[in-house]
Image 1 (cartoon, protein in one colour):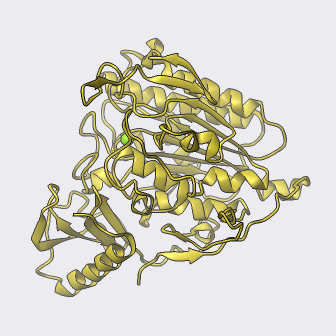
Image 2: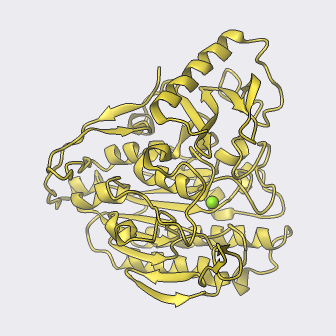
Length: 449
Ligand code: MG
């Protein structure tokens, strides 16, 4: 059965939370998203030539998710999915990414995590890359639930050096503070540090209310660069230095959260928007960014929430960025303000993610589910539990005979993550089962040929 479900979340008046009991039920949420960081770029996942001591420590104090995926393996659709819990095919964002001259963006009707936390009294901030539209004011992060933004509207290569369209040169990369462009073409080697400084300042400025901060680094999306103090430190070279500086940023944020006494009540999630582009750092996984192999869709994911999540566990259960919004909504005790239709009535909203709050709180792992791998608005592959069925070549051409891979062994441990051994001939019944899942996703989300 297809695990898409429909929730009707009724609009609710903002509530007044004051007691400590209520506050502990409303954890802070910090999501740190890197750009094009490969699954293998974590010390705890076998990185070579670079170290990530703070992320390794965070994994030791929390949970490392080894089978955590994004629904489309490029920047724009991946971010849309993370912030809305809905598949980008529903949002007109299933194809490629937003460019400096693009006219489209995340529709105003979509409801972001910031938009559901804000009415419940959360402070909301975005530091770093947005990439969900900039051509019209309705696409601005401050119109999508965030109260603060310091960052850039799209990727760091979409500037006057690299990007041309119909003979027009893109402007230097703009750096925004809230609704103002404060710099054009900021020195990129300092962006990881500047974003971290801003994030820490924003956290410090808060009062008693809980907060949600989305810190979306531009690194290690190319062109990569690093602050002076991190240059030349890692054996791997510049790429290693860049990841090491990101790791240092994580360490600074965790230290700050500890200093202000919010360690227990802060959910920290570290992940990446898609697989690697700059170099082959997918570890044992096949493929990279913008492929529908695991190396494109499966990303590093470490979560820490001392009050609830266990310490030092590795969870292999398949999950995805789509699950974050429904799960965090439950954990933060908020309801969806999807009453803001033109006629003021609540309306149903189809979420593609699953609410995994009970699992996080110590319940049994979620039921087996299916997951679609889309590229350029075409369904390339589908997984069901530990199995993955590939239906198309990377080029988009339909495979005459779909290929079946066992991503995990029966006990859930990783198996053929390099998608090397096609088992379709041995398991025709499974091929049929996964074909049905694929058909259901196509019916639900569509496909454009
Ligand atoms: Mg990216």
